[in-house]
Image (cartoon, rainbow over all chains, first blue to last red; front, side, top):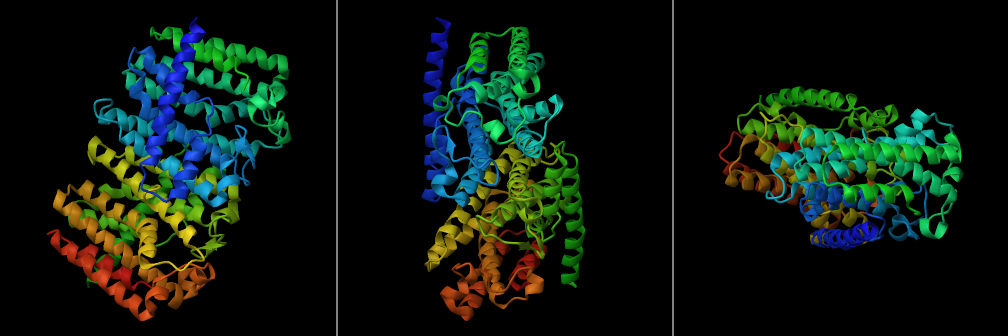
Length: 297
Length: 297
């Protein structure tokens, strides 16, 4: 029953998000090939977990999730730009992403780099353009600052650098967590924070939701590592075992597969404990957390 | 005498800017190699024309130019990121920039791409962090939105794409202007607009200053094309004639050298006419305009 509620919520809001993304890029007065490259990767699908976290957090405040549409679109643009740049030959050199040729395979490296740059830049404009009736100027500036921190050198980009630096080395648990907290965790956390700021969270709620998102991000990453070894290539859209091919340290490697599965459950339980503390209507967020920890792709 | 006034103004404010940039990157809690790569290109020098336009525009409003320091730093970060990405092998493939090895030659392509991404992202955070006593929340949001427009697919990135698409073709004058207005013009214009918004411009002043910056941007680019043919390699820090090596259309090519010099003077005169209309204390801006049109590098 509840799984069906989340399914319907996901379906409805994924569609709204995807149409918002299409409209936002369509209206740009820019060279057609650039818009095409931006759309290509935005449309490549994916689970849209970050937008769903924005919407479900708003639902926890019993606000209309749709007021998070522009923030969710901005976050998905940042996530998408990071995938385009990560896939480049000088980075992970991936030919496939979600089962489709990567951006640079279709448009060439130069356009891929620029499409990424354009998406990143646009994400801040989109936050700036959120209507006044949805967010005050103060809230929008908070979103700009927090989004930049989550995406930049102190967040996602810093994590990507640490990840590259760690290739071919056996990392300590601390180093591995630094990478994941930054590379994927900070933007996941910002998705929840964006929903919380738009939902009118008080300080205690903001802190509990941050902690929820922090542990959820770690659970997400552990499950990613587990899937890389046990997953189904067709569902994943990439080869199984690609982390070890790329000489990346993983949780199963450091903790054994059994240990990684135990750690996943611990992080998930911790995340839900913080969620309970908020006193909000958390059923959707809780289901998303379970989904993230049990997903097969 | 007045040249000396501009010299002193330039010296003082370049130093302030460079120390601001250093401090802003230094305080980041990020992987050392990433910060080093960001600093490397920020410190590579250059004329700092965009920051100077911010400061001189504030001086035109008889405001303390220093209130523009963070906006100027943000703009210089965007300019610097664009140079790092433009120099990449898949783009212009340049080994030297301002006489020094380009970022990717020193740090490798992956770090160069990420350092660019980090600078772009940080620029928006820096705007968001401008103290309330310098700019209201509303002004800061305007800066975020206008900076994103100037830097993104409708501005600089769009111009770069059009520039690449035009390589190897003989462009019409209209196509050449599209490229320059976007690739370099929009960010130059935003520098003046940022100074104007922080200086408290009214609508008419904003429009006249925009037109001033628009024509100044074109003059800047024509002089760039002229220098590419007539300049001194040591001063330029890059080979003379590199535009034709890269099969780029230029003003001298479309208009003859004589015609290009005439066009330069026309755009410069137009820009100064709009400047006169503002009724502001424009002597520094006028000198910067003359300097841009007569610079030798």
